[in-house]
Length: 230
Image (cartoon, rainbow, N blue to C red):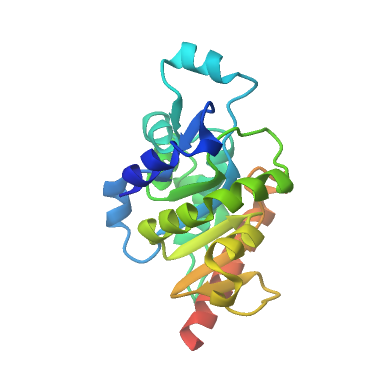
């Protein structure tokens, strides 16, 4: 379903003569094995350095890029190493305890373990083509206005239990409808249907690792506790 959706998506006028970025579930087999913490990272856009559409086409013999395939083949790099940390922070946190960063470093900081964690997540970029190194919210809004329905469909097909918005929460509200999300929460978590939605920083942020890790873990823990009372 995801492939069919994105194959039709890439034919839209907005994405013609641009590299189209496929994304979604990184590894469907690993995803299905996750029982109750299927995590979707909702991010902004994929960037392919300063390369023109023709240069990309000539070099790679395609006009498409598949982020999930790249992550499966090559494992996490740079920003995705941080995403692996964040996924672990959620995975190892429950209502009684927070994930431990030193345990992650001791047991999961090796590339193979990080790759294992990345294979268990999904990722959706709001902007599927013409990515830039520094996102412009007005530009993102232009794409969102055209692609809102398809983004809603993509998220619905993936059907995660937890959505981490990487500086994209205001766009998420536009996609699903603000009225369908629980009211404002100063602890940065919300509920949409039966899903936990966390309004968090983008993983490319420069804050210290420990701050990112424990902030996300604690927000998720508070969300879990609140969901049990919800």
